[in-house]
Length: 311
Image 1 (tube, helix red, strand yellow):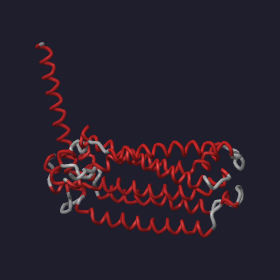
Image 2 (cartoon, one colour; image 1 turned 90 degrees about the horizontal axis):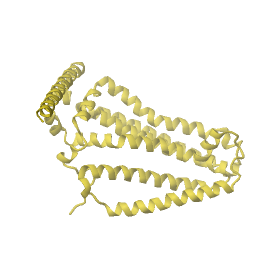
Image 3 (tube, one colour; image 1 turned 30 degrees about the vertical axis):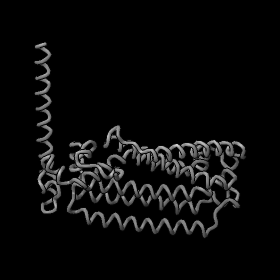
Image 4 (tube, helix red, strand yellow; image 1 turned 60 degrees about the horizontal axis):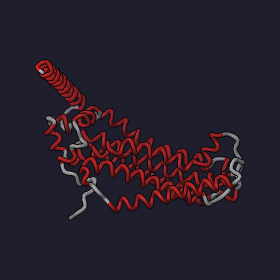
C-alpha cells in the first residue's frame, strides 16, 4: 500500500483544515490592487537578503576588527554574491510568471503570496547565515564553528519542518497516522542538535570569547548571527506552513470548495468580469453570509434557552 503524504488528502480530509473562514479570507484579499502590492512584498523578501549580503561582504569588521586569517578569500565571497544575485533574479522572474499565470484563478492569490514569501525569505536567511560564518569564526577565533553552525542550522530546519509536517498529518489523518521512519530520524536529529550545542558551548567558554567587541548586541550578532538569521525563517514557517497547505488544498479541490460554499464562477475566478465589480459582489456575498450566521446563532441561543427553561 502506498504511503500517504501531506499532499494526498482527499477533499473530505482537506476540509479538516480548509474551513469557510479561510475561504472568505482568501476571497477578501484577492483583488488586482492587493495582488500588485503582494508582488512587491515577494520581491522584498528576497531582496532583503541580497542587500545585506552585499553590505556584509564589504563590512570593515571582516578585515579590521578580527584576525584576517579566519576570513574567507575575496573570491569565495564573490562566489556567494554571484550565487545570491542569480537566485534573486530567478526568484523575481518566477514570481512574475506566477502572477501572470494566476490571473484566471484569483481565489488563489493569498496562497500564491504565502508560498512565495516563505521561499523568498528562506533564501534570504540561508544566504545571510552563510555570509555570517566567517564573521562568527573570526569572532570566536576558530573555523570549527563554521561547520558546527551549518550542521546546527540544517538539523533545526529539519526538526521544524518535520514537526509541522507531523502536526498537519495528524489533523488530516487522525491518530492513525504513524511514521516510524520519521520518528527514528527525529531522534537522530535530537541527538545531533543537543551534542552540537554542548560542544559549541564548551568551545565557546574555552576561547577568549569577548575579545574584539564591547557590547552585548555585538556579541550576540557576531557569535550567533547564523542562527539568528535562520530563526526569522523558522518563525515565518511556523506561522504560515498551515495557511500555505490550506491554499494548496483550495487549489487542488477548487471546484468542490466553490460549490460547497456557494460562490459563482465570476466571484471565484473573476477572469471575465471587472475587478471592482467582482470585489463588490464578494463583499455583498460575505455580508449576507455573516447575517445568516448571526440569525442561526440567535435561533440556537433561543432554542437552548427554551430547553433550559423546560428542564
